[in-house]
Amino acid sequence: MDGRRRVDAPPDPEIDGIRRRLGRIRSDAEQRRCRNPIVFRRDLPVATPARPRRLVAGGLVRLEDEVAGVARPCPQGGAAYVIERRFDGSCETWGALCGEFRTHLQDAGSPIRRLIAASCGLDGVRPDDVLFVDLETTGLAGTPLFLIGTMACEGGALVVRQFFARDYSEERPVIAHFAEAAGGRGLLVSFNGKSFDMPYVRVRAAAVGVPFAPDPAHLDLLHVCRRIWRDVLPNCRLQTLERRICGRVRTADIPGSEIPEAYHEYVRTGNALEMLDVLEHNRQDLLTLAELMVRLPPPEAG
Image (cartoon, rainbow, N blue to C red; front, side, top):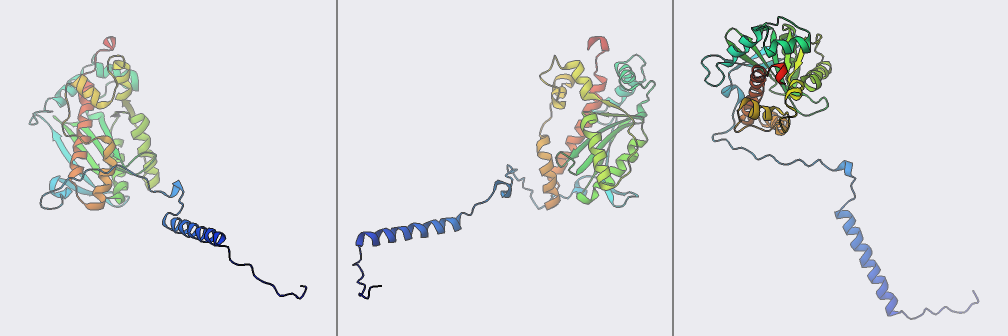
């Protein structure tokens, strides 16, 4: 310094105004940053369409009150809720189906017998050897399953047995009971079961520690129907086949895409109202498989 006293310059009103504006801008930016923090897409919740809630007068619908079944334990621990229903001559809609199925399967020249022999290498299959199967899951890629429906021809009736998990912990007994039921049969019949149902069951059996014996012979009706009707029908979805081949239309059926969320809702709330729809959906699928088998055309007509 040269020893001379420093004299500050008088304040510049224009510069002071700029400083005040910059201060307000910084303050506003800081407040916006706090109100709207940056988040990555992976942190955002997955939005799913809300299902319309069905209200029940008087409170919740309990499964055990509406569906007669038994809690059946298994050696691996736990119990599954097993629901059994017989479709015989007293059933107006399905009463004749068991008799038709037996007649077709016992006729050596019937399309069913010829198809089983050609596709599975089995001859002389008896009606009691056949087990129809259809399952309901909580999604794809190995997520838990909660319902395995089976149907067998016993005496003069088609008997549907549904192994149901009332919560996620009952998946193991569901699979164990199905493994036992399948082990006593010579032929499984499914719709897309070779690609989906049986591989799915095997993955879940390994996940929950249930031993699973080799599959019996397996007739997948999806592949059969595609060979026969793919050039006739717009598609070979099961409900398309119901309408066009069986001449039947479902009413008030729950869409398959809504079944996983319906089950999660049941576990959360204990309200089984939509589970009644799911159980009926599963039964209808099984009965349709038998109906399709008795409506198969002779090989030369396919």
